[in-house]
Length: 86
Image (tube, rainbow, N blue to C red; front, top):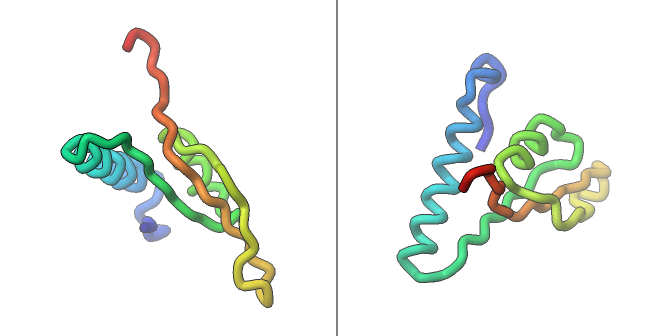
């Protein structure tokens, strides 16, 4: 998923990501399984990486991709964010 440049900074990406996580959590709950969410982004995409980390995802692996273009991907997995008082 991505947000077009002219719509960035309005919380759209954050809302889309939150909805995706909620959908995954609901599905996992119906199956009586723990939720494991996985995302992949290019290592140079600092905006996406920041969004994912603020939402509770942690980088778990880096892989080389499209070696002729020297691209590196970062794989993230969801780790629930602990909120004080909950």
